Length: 184
Image 1 (cartoon, rainbow, N blue to C red):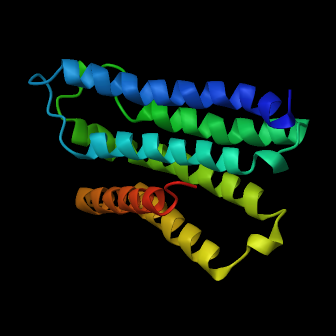
Image 2 (image 1 turned 180 degrees about the horizontal axis):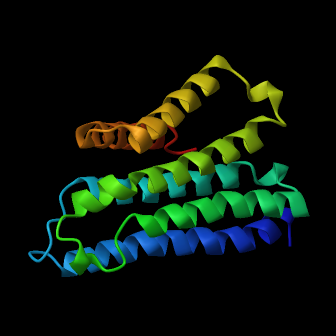
Image 3 (image 1 turned 60 degrees about the vertical axis):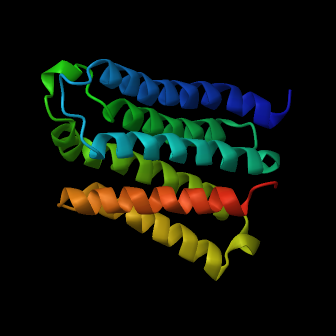
């Protein structure tokens, strides 16, 4: 078993549980169609969490040769995947029938969702970039800075349209990134 396989056996589980949290919330919501107003903000939050989680999985794979199997790595990974799980569990209400307007739920909980995702990304970005100064280019910092800035605006911006715009912008960024890296 490689160091990556050892470390990722734990974090793959937590990331998988995070994906299940969001997908389960989506399924519960679809079952309540017509009973609750879903709106657009909660589904956008859910989609963003799913896509960002997937991007982290991809980053972990790309950095697999540089991931040591030690206690510090396990703690760092626990912080990242724990924040992802927290965020994923906050996207949809546990009792959706008690929330007639899901956009209201999203407005009240977006700080927790996006704050957790922002924290995960800050930790992961620092962990990947810090030991590799050769990767410190203007392009890398600009790309990460824009994405992390949009996450912060989505978390703390007041109007719902602003949060929604940031979510759409970040999803567009990930779509572009998927297109650019297609075949790699």
